[in-house]
Image (cartoon, rainbow, N blue to C red; front, side, top):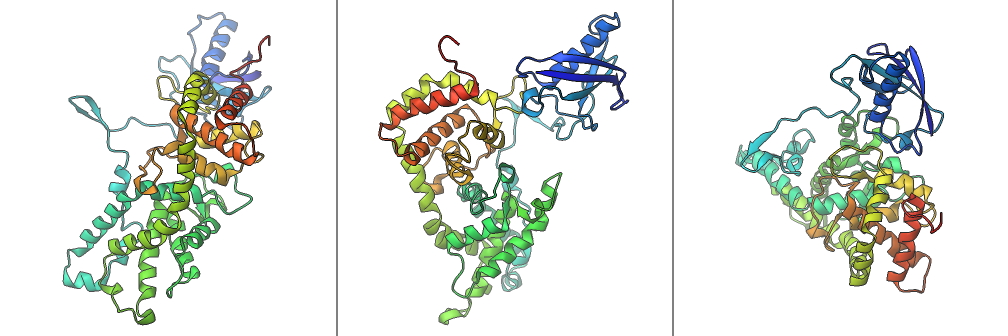
Length: 438
């Protein structure tokens, strides 16, 4: 792999003061290496000491400052051009790229740094920002002016109790229902997928129509636009996980209101807490109609994970880790390896597995098995990084893929034997296992 690098002083942008050619082998280096190597070549060409010039940014020809932890061959191909800005230092890479983390506020305890709980965002869920305060019944507020915050807090508690299951349902249904769903759709749910969820959960009925359910989605979609830095015509009509949770509360309120007076049912909705309505939606729709299928698929894979399969996975652990390493878009020193499922998907496509042997809806269930360690959705844990895979997660994803392929291809040999075949196939495709004599 060969990259052309144009260098210019910091602040000059995409000017061309000096040009060097970098030969990068297979391109497994990160962009930080590109900056330092180009500056060292510039110093050599000018007869200066090697550390004379310090890189400040690596940019595209369009002037976009890039994350220096990006792996070269994940975004660029041989012959591409990059621009490097340099200065006399002493601090390197002072230019900010989009998404570059700032130093977070921190606290210290007896055991070191005290980090907030990973579910803090849900504990602090701003119900008013999502319009949930308007769903609290006026009749209850008239009885007790302080009832608003109490009902909203109890609604948060219900969301916290079922957070793991609701997150898994969102993850599964955001990739369901459409033939043209692509990797880029991961993390957001569109209206067709929401309708698919509504249909399978059997939310409509008892005076509540599917069209009324659409209103919950329509109310949340505009509020989710600010959660993405770059929006387009497709993402503007989608909701995030937070929007999905809020939509469920709106659904629960509208469904309870529609049921009032139908079939002789007493008028109780006006005196029912929002938290109670949400709990009723989960117990009467999601628990009997959505969760059993998830539990069935999780249990089937768990039962197949025999001691023999576990032993085989352990033997291939190092190669499994190396395989996940090859899927990284970014590589950060001393950071735990976690690879975004979207980048793993790109490699699954290159390995002719995804979209050939299985599709994204299948992968949604596989990734759920990879992240959760319990069969029952009611016992699922809210994941701090729901679409990021660590080594353990990727190992379980590899096993889940094997189970799917074993059934899809109607193979006759034992699953453990087939697992070894799939592991070898993936390792060779990733380039971490070579044939003898090669």
